[in-house]
Image 1: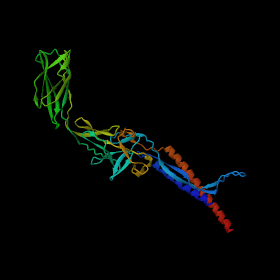
Image 2: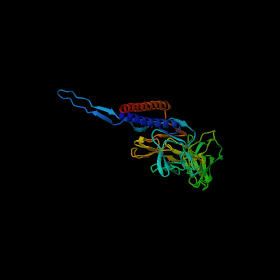
Image 3: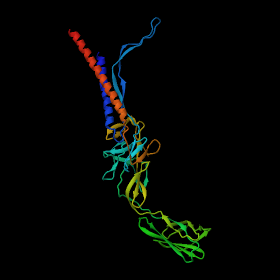
Image 4: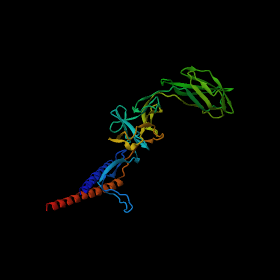
Length: 392
């Protein structure tokens, strides 16, 4: 009699756990990066009423008799299926497509999350909603070394990018072969020194009876004119001239056809110092900064972490997880590489809770709870009848 009572009680306790889990899933239907959970049940030990026997020459074997003693929760597992994407338009928001977690530092302790709703604090740290500092690899002079241990990412709007001295310039276009002797075409472009200071590089193309000459002038002074040799309109020598300050001017694309004057300095490779204005996120987690000098350079890269058994992670609250003895040690890597998902900027991963399934589970758990309660009630009634028999 008591077996049925305690079996009913175990059913109440187990179904209560399923109700709690289902309620938590429904409550987090709008939680970014949330992973739903499900309850797994198993039966408890059974009481043996009779042992099995082996057949003999005159009597056949018999099966044992056992009565189950109820149910218990075997475990609560997480559904790690990726949630749907929601575009936010905020460049600081990030979503992992595939496997991986964002490592974040919370009070010096590394935790892991799928919630990519990041922002910047007053110190320029890239942080989660609860203040965890996102880990990655900062860029140094536009270069990211992602082979080291991840550290906190710091992004300060207004931070400087180093200038680059001009070392090359390029001339394109046509020098008219039918120009009058003595015609001078002056072409200028702004160039930069190692400190980012601006100066002018000037080219003077002069038409002579023999063809065209070119002379350079910049902050280092002027150079002597050099004759240009064209064959069938194509420059054959020299294809490069060097200014007084050492800037190599590439002339290979210049032509010498009649009737058109389009020659000019089309570009140079230097730039001044600039300040960070904004940034975007590429699929490998690189933060591409846009600077006031027009340059786009990496300012850091977000790290990802994977585990041999991600279901073994322990939920710490605030949408964060921590490693456990059964999850394995975190392996850090770059988004998009083998075993790591890619990152989408300006989007967030939504909860993977399926409301239709959760409502179904809610009904199942409720009915199972009611049935277990009926078992307890029935067992109590029988005990009352036994007690009345004893007292009569």
